[in-house]
Amino acid sequence: MLFNSIQFAIFLPIVFLLYWFIFDRFISKSKSQLRLQNAFIVVASYVFYGWWDWRFLLLIALTSFCSWGSGLLIGKAQTKKRAGMWMWLNIVLNLGILALFKYYDFFVTEFAQLFHISTDGLLLKVILPVGISFYTFQALSYSIDVFRGKIVPTRDIVAFFAFISFFPQLVAGPIERATNLLPQFLKKREFDYDTAVDGMRQILWGLFKKLVIADNCATYVNQVFADYTNQSGSTLLLAAIFFTFQIYGDFSGYSDIAIGTAKLFGIKLMRNFNLPYFSRDIAEFWRRWHISLTTWFRDYVYIPLGGSRVSKAKVIRNTFIIFLVSGFWHGANWTFIAWGAYHALLFLPLILTGKNRKYTNQVAEGRWLPTLKEAGQMLLTFMLAVFGWIIFRADNIGQAWQYVCGIIDDSLFTMPFIYVGTKKTLIMVAVMLLLEWLTRKKEHAMQYSRMMPSWLTWLCSLAMVLMILEFGGQSQSFIYFQF
Image (cartoon, rainbow, N blue to C red; front, top):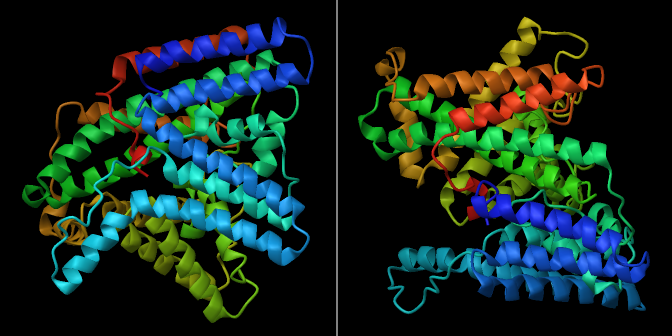
């Protein structure tokens, strides 16, 4: 079920009313009430997920049950070695399922090409379950955190199933940690009107980024990439810039909708994007982009490898490992690995000079505008990201190389081709950037100042609704559903 579908527009209010009105009002205030409320979340989440293909519900149920059971076995283990055995068993099981569905055909195909053998009868050709990379990593973090003693294993299987399958963030994150999300399913939740209103506004902002920014950018991007060999350098560059905003509007828009929806149910999810295109270097970009994934790899891969507390050579090794793994997490294609390697290379100068933690504050803090230096840094970082997204968007390495070569041409200095709606898209992107710049200290752009009168906040929300209805593009699937 898509967030930008009629089905979800019907599904969400029904679930919301049943969740608060039936289970919070008419059932006795007891542990059974909480369990029934959590059970309802599980049922609603399975309906939401099963809307694509009900058969994959068995897969998420298996992941949930095995991870829940591993937590109990880790907690009961008499020795650290035995606990580690149960943890690794759960890791191997979950990564094995992920590898089977996501990477098996890729490796078989590459092996067959390398040794010039046929793949007849060897490929599974199975559909990739939606969101499998997201909920698998969420399940893995639970058993690892139990092993590390960061969280006590829960016996409440209903709450655990709700933690893994919570529908707002099930298929495209944020990738939550058990230390944050699971305890919220183990205690009574109270309805808070202000939080719910803020959640609705965040949903609205997410829909704007998805429907107005991402979907309109996608129209131009798809047309150019489909015929990239016959386009001018300026057109190719504009399409690459549009894809940069498309993937941001698409993915961060999804995250905003997910976080806002969770607020309606009294659940707080972690922030997944923090204005990445206002970054002053590539390290700051990655602290602001897909935060739940980057911090996951930091905590469960980078730090166990030694993190930054080792020699420079090992820090470089660790950096390349997490970027290559992060690239491969996105899909079974060499373009994703190349994209990861590209960003690792961009990190090298910062690591060697010890400046990878230089910018941890908000840009232009205490000022309306950035300095010329900050503006230059943001522009350079943005353009580095643009060329990285070309690799990410391309079907293969050859296409990515041809696309970049097509940009570096005399035609780069000509006027790009303007399709119907291109000027409108540019204006809407400018509106998004302006709103995000003005509200960069807020969690999202629709989080108004408390000093604003209520009538003005509602007027702004109405204006946003009208912009979505007027300027929304042709509906496109969320990009990160494929991962």
